Image 1: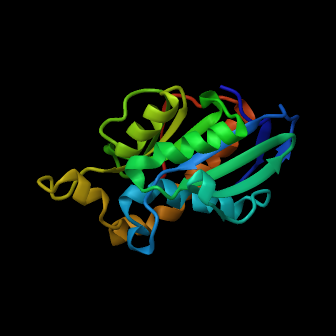
Image 2 (image 1 turned 45 degrees about the vertical axis):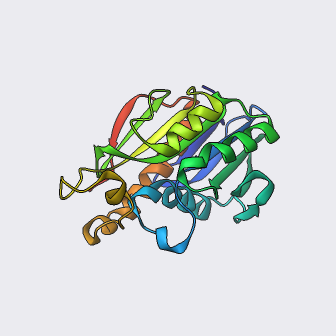
Length: 214
């Protein structure tokens, strides 16, 4: 799975230097729900990570509204590769509409798409990486897979387990991160930026588990 030929500078996930571009376009997608009422909710982990990536990466431009593509978008050119980051404005269960529209407009194939999203089946503090696989009941992932197929990269942010266990899953993920969890959000976003940096350099998204709680 190809991406940019970039490598992070030691100790700073936002800093990159060019080893040679592939003249490709890469699409990064953060899943979540638009609107202030959903800010800092567990279901918006993808939005939170992508917001931080755009804010801390000098090559990325500020977010703009792209109504025709049903998303907010940030563009950047790193070396010879164009990087497009989007946050769908369709709400979670229709996320695939925005991903499909952006992929079609910019002619990006699924092997050059990475989706960042929350995962209830993974404990908070862990991030798992993979290509393809089931939606595990995640409506946003289900929508994206229905729109472009399953051969895209996944950065899965753990938000589980449910507390209390009897709470409905849909209610739990729409709650805001607890105060204790919010203390760790900067570690979470920093780890995701580091994953992006490594992926830019290696051109591969490994199947592995990472921890962001220090």
